[in-house]
Picture (tube, one colour):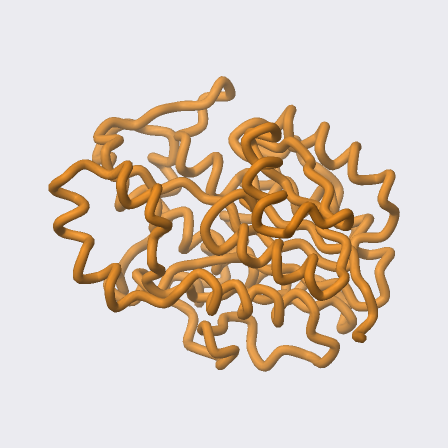
Length: 287
């Protein structure tokens, strides 16, 4: 069997994250499952992994800096961390008006970008202690349909012009930009990748929870979408590969794909990095 690793994954209680956690556990890796609702997640993860003893749940709310810092402190007990998969994200199309965290950050931006950024930074010392650390971010193939999308730097926490779709894809663009910037900052033994996830079949429970109109509209797309199991295998390969990845931005088949237009702008990436660091309390990275 391949060398056992310690791998953290956010949003490990449903969808692709749950399947990835199960695949990693079945392969003998120690899985740190970072989930917002620890009790509910324990039930789902236990069922998916057959009560595997190599899975630990760490309560983590990515919209809350306090929760992220507490989770990072808790994870120090596990020593070196071989990989981090930033899988968790929210995308609620029924949320027609902007919601904000206690810190004043727009909820999608806080959960889908600022949270993964701060978590990665705070776990970077644990990752740096591993011989071949791997850091995985998740973006969306939907960005292809928005070639002119840019980060709204001056309106990140504004309710003006809000839509759940815009908020979601802006945060996903930020993940591509962060992965690209981080890959330029880390030493050669650190692998950084961002997976361009295509449409994925929704779990039956999640699909049933959608309004009737959305269920009807999503049905054809869901039928043609990739399975969570297939995409989970992509996550697992990115987190456990021993050889360098060809390119930072990859598709579900591990092939390098062009990064979005806005992510090629070095000045925009530096601006995003600076404001993300500030939002994270100017946390010090290991690299």
